[in-house]
Image (cartoon, rainbow, N blue to C red; front, side, top):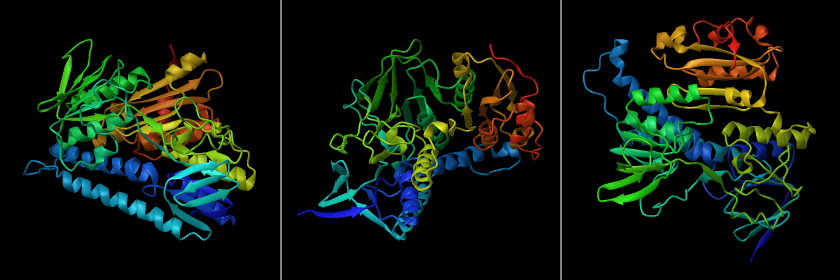
Length: 461
């Protein structure tokens, strides 16, 4: 027998947008239910940013230990990675983060945490177990999951995803990573530093193909220097069970036609968790990939339902999900007229060194027809990078010819994930690069060299 409860708002999912929205609405006096079928905190806290960056930190420590003598630090015994301790450290950080979300939500007056799978049974009704929840405003924040690709042999071999990868408490002998983009490369470098032999298989001609060619080639360079094998132009990937592990068929233009390995990581994209929500019952439209269609204010085809975070296909980052919350909350509570289309693209790739990207890429600028100039400076000419002994990469900034406004940047080097925010603020403010150059900065930092990058601009060809 079902019971019914009514609320001012229902939030489905406790990823980055959900808890913040529930807290903001309850603070405004709303009665809110927040529903979660799994671990509180969503992808970022449980199997995304928090655990992966904790493991990236361990891998960085291992890398520094191996190269300690370069800094005058002598380690008598060879450094050894204890994956059980790496995993225990990661698990503790994740557990504390998830418990923090739970304590926060359960402490909020006006918020009811409901555990279970939610499914629409009407335009403004959800069923969770035996309970029917009703509200005139429903916010879907259900995130996504790793894509299972339709590859020949996929059901014949065991494989890992970005989620199950973090359950490992040992170092694979030979890890084959299918997918040469952000997730795949972070894990590839991480486990190479832990001690695995690593091969990255990528269907395209270069890794992180959405980036400019010089960025991709530089990343390929430092990954290869660490001993990671890259198999590019793998046009027809097939998976095969072997007596001592597995192999990946490549049909590559050069090299072995089949790559053997002991473990396989599939990092070929993500899909939204929208297939079992009953969205059709609520008249909520989705696109052909399953992402919920939204307008600029993140409202769906059902005016009582909004979609936030990865499930709307408008960002797929923790920071874009949080910005979704800000857009929706400000519009509801302050009639702010905010739109998700007002934000600039900005993100990072957490290899070592990291990539910080903001605004338009060079290929996007060329495609748009804008007349632009570009400045570039190698990290070998950045004092902070030299002092740290981390001189791989470069700083590249594009400006519009005539107006001088900054169009975008690709910062690949130590500290790039932080220094990119200086340019982000300048682009939002529509600051001409000549004004940006006048602002004094701290020495020694990477950010202090950004104005110098703009000293010798040349036309984008």
